[in-house]
Image (cartoon, rainbow, N blue to C red; front, side, top):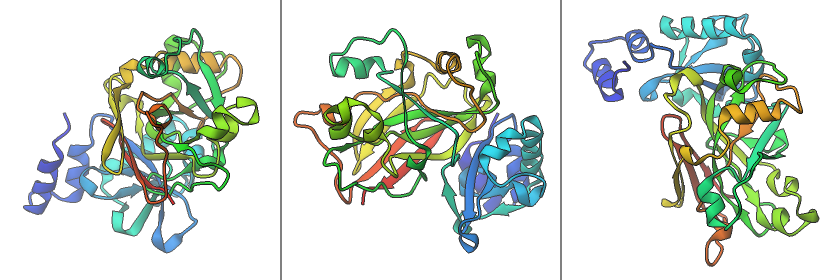
Length: 320
């Protein structure tokens, strides 16, 4: 059982445990929070790490093993070897970089695919009086939309109706095609938090009402703060999920409202395309988006959007 964060921090402050002791005791049992980061002194150099509890920093995996790659996508391609080295690095208590020395990046950058699912929450369908889909509704964002967990969301000049959508995201860990539902979770490396930022004017009224352009402006996919390994979550389909704008809760639901669960989405999409390590899936949003409010509400310069999912974490992005 993991020790409570307060107990871990208190033990360190009282001199009862070293940082290595905290790592070994606090993050045993398969829990892993993988991140991408760069040191402030090495802007542009991406590293993969394991996030520690209680703000104690990040274990630099390449610092521990120089044979490991720099990016998450390449790290996932190493498969079991990479994960075993990550566990060894974590238990060693070595190569810890303090949070003050680094900037957290999106847990995955430059994925081959960003697969998105529309209308995938029952309560979101009810919100707009829409029928429950009988098959997953799939669209995409370009990878260039991905931005970090604390980076800015840029309002494009081309849109006046930019909206928020908190979403559970997952990342593919190994290559597969025609994956069976019962085996699908073994292809998932872990889960993270996403904001499917959306330009509703482009999504709903322009470009033939195709969704792609309204969904894929630069910075329209904040992601993070960490990739929480699948084994670390008791049930990804029973997590509280919420979004706040300037401190006010605008979305508040649970992933148990998802119509098509992770296993179904992996099996469905892998009928059409080969899934590869690093591919990102956004699984849909609950009710409370701005476009369906009366009157509609859209993001403006200076707004702060927080998307949070229990057991996974929180991302916070300022609108500029």
